[in-house]
Length: 536
Image 1 (cartoon, rainbow, N blue to C red):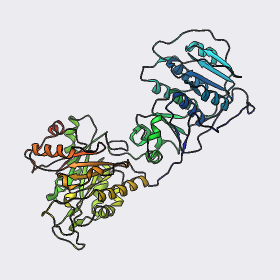
Image 2: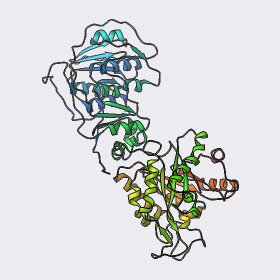
Image 3: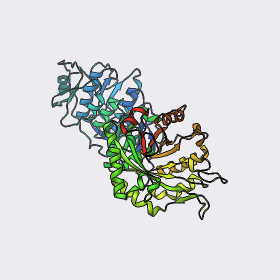
Image 4: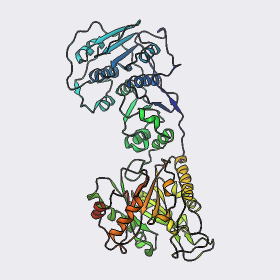
């Protein structure tokens, strides 16, 4: 799969050095000139609403002889100003405590006429300022627009309403108590709209309503998202996939602290979705897995039937959870790819490594059926990274994750079943680094990395494991067997003092748990609710 690295440019409301027409000589007063950002990813991450409005204008408009202005604290003026800006095809700028950025942007745009909507005061400074109340009638008189009715916007719906505006027809957005009437002294010159920037996609968290209005006025598509990670928004993934090599503008203060925004945007643009939707694992789904090895009934439920039967059984095991959780339920295979062995074998590592050719039909058929797949490693006397690399071509599939089972990680003088194994955090981190790099380089959705554990000693140093790589969701999987009370006590011990970034998994044993919890009991008694529940 081809990987793209997106260049990143930062644009801010106070950015210096961006100059446009100073004297208006490039065209008449109402000329509008648009320009898509020169980079594939542009960041407008100002927390201040006035600076964010200026930053968006700078990103998309080269020139605009007309601009709309409102006060940042005047909701009615901003909403109706948004309608006017989108209807005219010109920027909407808002005034904050410091008017200097606004003045500088009007100068850069070559704006000779300003429509001031609502409770905002502007000095002319060589421009024609037409002040109107925040009423649809007044704006229509001043602009020549004909609104196709009005829309009352709920208190929490400003960003969504503005993102949905179109230039034709244009709707007059209003708050709960719209103004009406009002005298208008003059009118704006006719605006010559520019061709829309259809190849620009704006990802917006919603703080900058004026920025969203300016984007829509430029003809850019706006996708609202409640996350700054584009992979975590199904709408963003779909929009990025469907847009032909778009210029992306990330509009919102939170984007400034989103590490790896460039590669996350590139990953979202592939359109690859995990089973259950989206490109990040949790929250957003409960995975319910059959555990075992193909063709071997003694190692778990997975191998008790053929491939088609295993897919059906995985779906049947997962189905009852749909009645007891609100989260989408995703059936899965946890395939033991390397099996702990009682003999050393030709390579002396006490582990049987299943050939990729043996596992591939199971992995591919599971993906086609909407199942997630986890490849489980029992490495014996070799290390986890060496074994993980054997299955790289399977791990390059978007629906395949990895599990490390320290119980079966031996020292050079150990054999299986004489002592429970363990693995140090350094070896785990080596796998994390390799798998995260593989995921990013191939623009893959987030991968699950499971660390099996039922004793604290199995993962010494776990408190310092590397959880900084957003390419992975790292999970502790409590896979002990026994009576429910004992298992819940182990669960509590494993969770004590754990890093909040960890995901959590639980295993139900068909024969060894006395009794095994039902799906409803598992959800009711295991708290917090696990994100992976496997069956052996």
